[in-house]
Image (cartoon, rainbow, N blue to C red; front, side, top):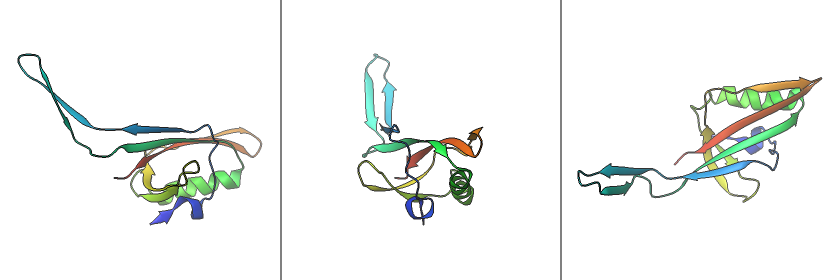
Length: 116
């Protein structure tokens, strides 16, 4: 399995966001009462990472890693720089946009989803 930290090695801007979610099935009865059932026993995490200032070579590292994973298809390991916890994740989307904003400078945002 590929590893983000050894292959790419770039740390995102520290204004990134972490989201936790559960999956709850809600059924409404004829009387109006709701029944709830948890479909996940653990929290599923997502991270939105921002790289506001990349050189063309740094941007190419991320782009090549993304292409090698075939977008959201292939999982990889990533070390959360805040908690120092390693997670198995994948890209959330099959689309990645790199923004060129001045000579040899790029901005890139991407999202990881925990693979449970």
